[in-house]
Image (cartoon, one colour):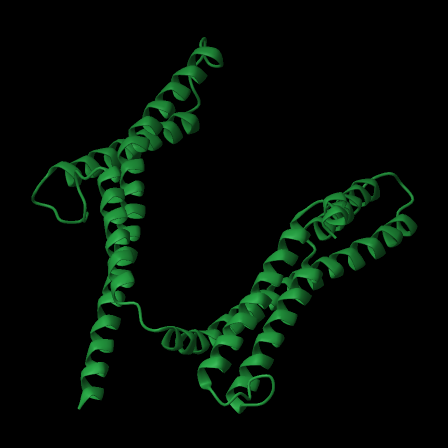
Length: 282
């Protein structure tokens, strides 16, 4: 008779924590939207004034003794008109109570930040009071790992494609330099093409040496494969997860995976450091 009660309690705890996450995500989105609204409210009239000043400056410093070209006047006049209309519409929506296009009109961003901080605090307090036992947390941790493996492999594939793109740019540009040098006898247009190709080779070589996409792809793929190997071993109950107690296996599995993720983060930090810094770390 106690099992349904435990299941009901666990379901209630899950619903409460999920609702906290939804509230936090909603407040984060509201803060982003409100920042854009405030930026439009104050940025649009500033842009209109700047356009007017630029228009007047061109008239004073360039066409003081002659008429401003019609195209210039039309461009600046249309820009000022559109910015003025946008400013009027935004402030009407902001100040009028008849429109509900914006969710948080007349609400400062700092007030939304305070609500977000309070929501995060409530989430922490409820999570602390409703924290499940370690074995349940370790089991749920195991269920979250497939998504982590997919993420690591997607990032690995991204860096692998970036590395291949850089290599192909180097191959094509380096080959084209020799071809253009042999094809064009006159300085132009061969000279300009050679400058562009040499610039491409230099930029791609520097970017490949700085960002190291090949090494990042290898490290991410290696971490994903290792985590998947341990997850398969735990699922099949083979060494090193063949202990009689499931709690022991889950604890060892969570510890091993966290060590693998920590090693991955350390390798990423080493790749972000200059070559001299990497040698000192190693």
